[in-house]
Image (tube, rainbow, N blue to C red; front, side, top):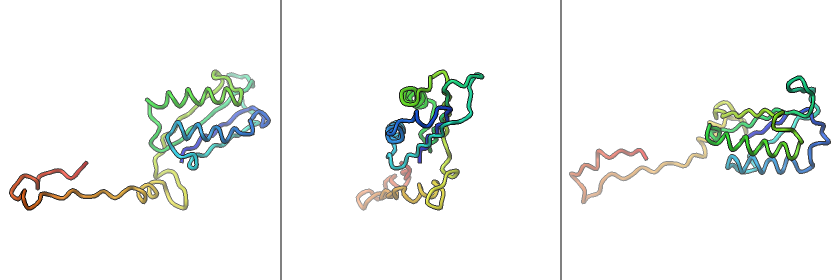
Length: 147
C-alpha cells in the first residue's frame, strides 16, 4: 500500500478539488501499483517554516514496499517536485521529500501484516518433474529445482 503524506503551511484553499485524484494517479503510475492501493494524505495550515521563512513550504513522505531504491528515487523526486510545485505552489527550493522502503512486516492492513498478505497471494511454485523413463540413469537427479 503506497502512501504519500504531504505536510504544508499552505492553506486548505490552495489544494485543488481534484488534487487527491491526480496525485493518487501519479503515485500509482510512478510505483507501478493499482490506484486502489494508494493512499494520499494532505495536511494543510501547519505552523511551518523552512530556513526561518514562513513562505509556502512543505515536507512529503513517499512510502512503499520494495519500490524505493537509488535508481528509481531520482524519478520519484523529480515527478513529485513538479506535481507539488504546479498544484500546491510549493517551490522546489522549499520542499523536502523523504522516500521510505518499508518492510512488509512493519505495515498492516485487513487485521494482519503485509508480509502475511503477500504470502497468501504468492503463486504456488510448480516443481519440475525429474527425468522420465527414457532418461533413466542420466544426471537429471542432480538438476537444481531453483528457478
